[in-house]
Length: 152
Picture 1 (cartoon, rainbow, N blue to C red):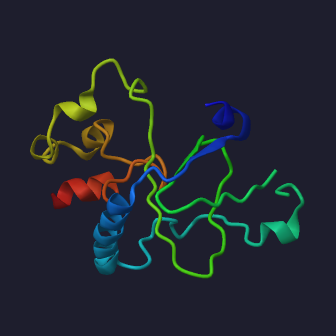
Picture 2 (picture 1 turned 90 degrees about the vertical axis):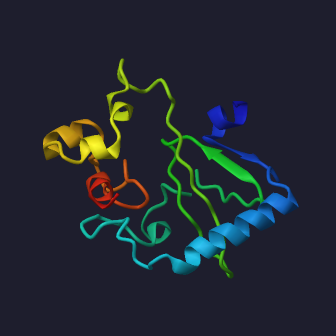
């Protein structure tokens, strides 16, 4: 926790054993084999600055984090982060976590199943959580929650 507080990240080395790591590679590899390229995750209307190190010196607080397979990288959402170049493909799993107490008094978003929510007006569906405040927040299985709801 001190490292996370001080640096904004911490590495937990080799948290997966060899057997669990092999199973993860196999299962995730099978999912990737049938996944579409160009998921649209970044959207078509985002603004990007490429080659940042060639244009500013503000990113020189940058620290590469290398770790052995099966390790876990924890970082605070406020930390500027990105993926670096590699000479070979890498497999990574990103799992976002939000404190469970960051919820309303009553869990309305969990109180009704898809079959109950689907016939409701779209605005009410959105209020129940089937909406996205931005392309990076709140998707379900890579889809806008409303699209996911209509396909389930």
